[in-house]
Amino acid sequence: MRGAWGGRGARDRRLAIQPGERQRSRSRVRQLLSGLVSSYARAFARPRRPLVACVCAALLALSSWSVASASERVYVVQPGDSISVIAERHGVSERDLRAWNSLDGDLIRVGQRLVIRGGRAPAAAASSSNSFLVPLPRERGGRVHTVRSGETLGGIAQRYGVRVQDLINWNQGLQADRIRVGQEIRVGASFVRQRRTLRHEVQPGEMLGFIAQRYGVRQADIVRWNPGLNPDRLRVGQVLVLQVDGPEEPSESRGAAFEGRLVRGEQLPPHRGYQIRNRSRAWGTNETISYLMEGFDAVLRRFPRSPRVMIHDLSFERGGSMPPHRSHQSGRDADIGYYQRSCGEVCTYRRIGPAELDVERQWTLLLFWIEHGMVDYVFIDYELQGALYRFLQAQGASQAQLSRWLQYPRGRGASVGVIRHEPGHRDHLHVRFSCSTDDDQCR
Ligand SMILES: [Zn+2]
Image 1 (tube, rainbow, N blue to C red):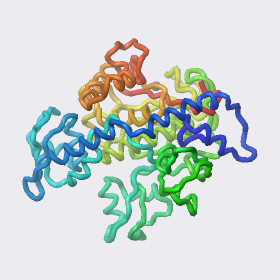
Image 2: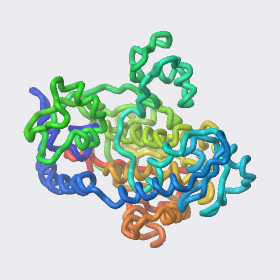
Image 3: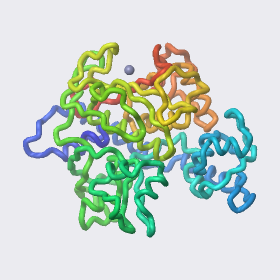
Image 4: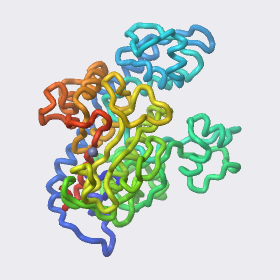
């Protein structure tokens, strides 16, 4: 299996071999397998403390409301809140929130009472409270909207802040004048990529939700692809048919990022979360493309009205030397501009200071990649790391989490943490995505 879980699907890749498919040595796969299985167990099987934290936060959030008038409510600021988070959560704009409360800068304090007019009911807020320490689940293609009586495509587009044309692009065969009640429409969905069918053999203890998570597909789709499947009665050894992103013949990342090439690369498609500077310099492995798109899907799920960030170089179609970079040769590197606190439609690619970093959006993207095992490391300027560090501390991150995620504050030369300092990363972050476990020539 490649593409959907990249480095994590060795076992399924073996099951997915079709007649005539090119054979590869899989010793490395077998070596890694036992470790991976236990890391899955750690990641998904055990109910963890963050779940409890979420519930507490939810209760706090509910109890922190009082009704001022029918359309006006008072919200009491909770630990870890920021203006952008509160605004996003309640479906109002930051500008309105500031205006209603005569707020000048970004400073708010715990216990402060903020007036919120209109917007969403607080119940919607509770479920997403304080979740910056747990990555959003993998979910291909954004959210799904079920059409209700009286809705039009224009109305749905407006509701999610997208264009009708976007909805048509994301939903094959969708016609503006022919939507029906109950129809499912993907919103913020990824560009439709080639799809590959593979088979997954159910392992002891696996449930459908777990399998869906792992491949970044929806449970409902698995049920649809497997007629007669009873989701509550999976048997060990049962084989499920799945469809994942990526072509039948997967890409390969040959050699190292600073001395390598790319075979059967895939070009980064357009996406509502980013703007590509030059598509001829935006080729990567199937995994790199999946991870980028899924990461921005995740940001848009949490913050539907996000600006686009700039994506500069990935690799050339066939990889190889790409001046002025030393790396970017094997389809696993990407240079991405930062989410900033004040952007228009697009966050420009520019040098920023720690106070300008939009830590909520930036961290949502980074955590998704890090916690789903998609990246080897990320280069971010040391001072900008400081902004992330302070934000995470305020969110209640443990010392173990902070030191695993960030090099900061152990010095800009320390070889620790997934996120590290490298000169020249004040205007963009550089992410190195992981090799696929069954790509033996990837270094
Ligand atoms: Zn770079």
